[in-house]
View 1 (cartoon, rainbow, N blue to C red):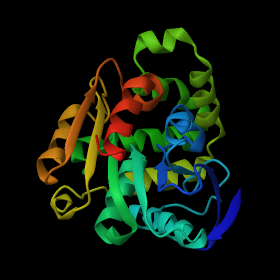
View 2: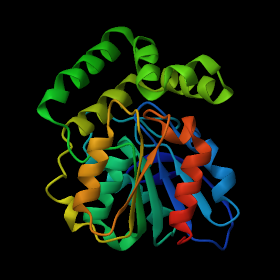
View 3: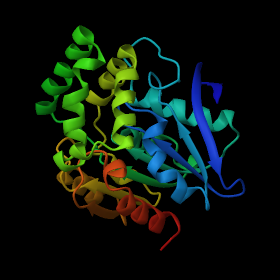
View 4: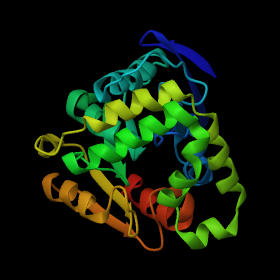
Length: 262
């Protein structure tokens, strides 16, 4: 479904238990709400599940780049206001986790809890050339030039060799991402620098990370864990960046344990 929020048309899906608390899911760069398909069946019996396409992705409107993480957080809050949802458990992976940090710092009253998956609180200077290279590739070759390198960062070789339906869906979503949206969100990500502030986050926080994630490694999650008081860290074996897709069972157990207070 689509709704006007923060001046753009945003695409979302709301499913699950109508009387339950809302779990809001924020996806990675060059993906969409379909990325969360492996989590819906676990969440839906207990929660309302709000999946949405971030600005410049999926069926949400693409505006001119660059974007900022603050803008993307405002989009999320505006979506909640448009849907008349007061507070949510926010779950964000990679870029979604960066947006979640911005939401927790700027709009804490809208969050019941925060789950940060395969993400970071800062992009170091040494990471800037890689981001610029991907932006240049998108401009010159389109998203086709980014598909294989992205999948290799996101998944272990053994998972890639399985050729699952989920993998096929992710590949299609990368290709379908508007170049302008990819560049806009990349520009937002490269300015990420919340490391010195995330100690201000006071909502209950779970941090999930694939043990083999090369882009936002375990060390990045540990840095967040050390700074957010009483946070919980879970490292998922045999997973790279999209740990929710590669190891959905282990991911879902950790997520549900946290959300249900176990």
